[in-house]
Amino acid sequence: MILILKEDTLLLLLTIIRHRQLMLQCLRNFPNTHSFVAAVKDEFPEFSYPAASELILKEGARVMFVKNDLSRDKLFFNGKIGTVLTFEDDIIVVKCADDDFPIRLRWRNGKT
Image (cartoon, rainbow, N blue to C red; front, side, top):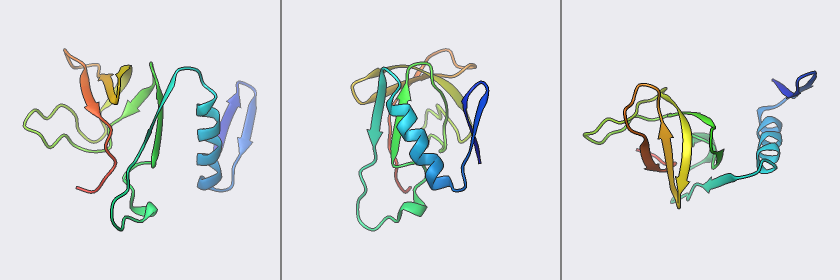
């Protein structure tokens, strides 16, 4: 796994765990970030999580949905890409290129 730190600097990481640790450390240093931590209920092993247990975002971040919207509105699907516009308390506002209106949602990390 290769991580680009600066335009002319590369860091070779041997494990995905070290990569995640370093990425979280770097993200926490960015200004105006928002952190969302999953609440784990019952027995739910970490290797089964559909996404990282901590999500760190900032306005302008490009994001990809990893689940389908199961509501009748079908606002997003697995693989849909958008840009974080803003945060409203615990709500993330995402605008996708082909949509007329932004998507407002609470981050949930759990089994379905």
